[in-house]
Amino acid sequence: MSTFTILLGGDLIRTPRLDRQVEGSRVIAADAGIGHARLVGLVPELWVGDFDSVPADLPADLAAVPRQTFPREKDKTDGELAIAAAIERGATSLVLAGAFGGKRADHAFLHLALALRLAEAGTEVLLTSGAQEGVPLLSGTAGFDYADGTLFSILGFSELAGLTVTGAKWPLNQVEVAFGSSLTISNEVQGRLDIALGHGRALLLAHPYPLPES
Image 1: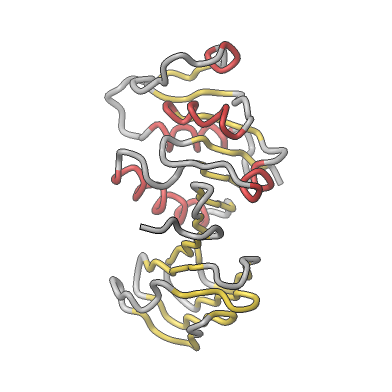
Image 2 (image 1 turned 90 degrees about the vertical axis):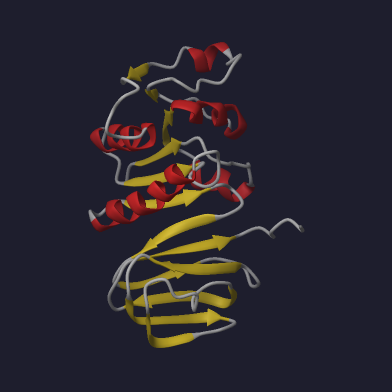
């Protein structure tokens, strides 16, 4: 398996879990995502984008990263272009670091939808901000290594059928979930979390670390 970490422009904090997830991966930065490289201790092999949001005062090793430049007026985001570059280089697994938050809610939504499309095409995808992470859910069964008490939600991108959740405070057994329903929001891990989906598209959103108190 060839894993690439894509540095995106959203929120990112460094955690031991994130270090394990990106360890040994190849790295491509998408425009402002280069600003996360020093945080996670990685130097990208490629920097992709229109470079309209380059961080100021980049260290010399990051400023020297080879660039693939695109016009500002284009039909793909810098993140999608960086992902395409990784797949061209043989990526079979992607860690989208900085996929949530940031200044552009539209870009964050695109990352969720794009992750589902990539998963359907056979690419393993993890979206992460360090504090929270997302995993596409397609038909079949998947297991997760989250600790007891971890908050998680299942976000439906269509109507869901045959959804079964075990190892949770509120288990589900072969339920149907209408598109837009909040039934699968704010659950907690209790034991080994396993999710089976008969039909539909969804994304698991989990918080491996406690949410900050408001």
